[in-house]
Length: 99
Image (cartoon, rainbow, N blue to C red; front, side):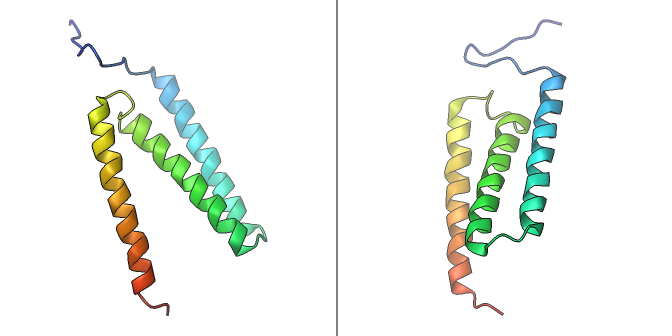
């Protein structure tokens, strides 16, 4: 079967690449769990956990959702909407009282 690609489309990586990305995500998750259980001040722990979560989010979106290999317009739309969604969630935390 002949494979037709759009001129700007990049070829997808081999299966071993996805396994490697999965291993990296597992390692980052293990680091997150370790950071949570270590006795780290809250002012230092939260930026570390948020940073690791952002890295994992980017990796999942870029590789498993194939945005890295699609047209750049799809990537712009996705991150534009995610940005507004994140801002909405962050803003709602300041409105809801703590229990």
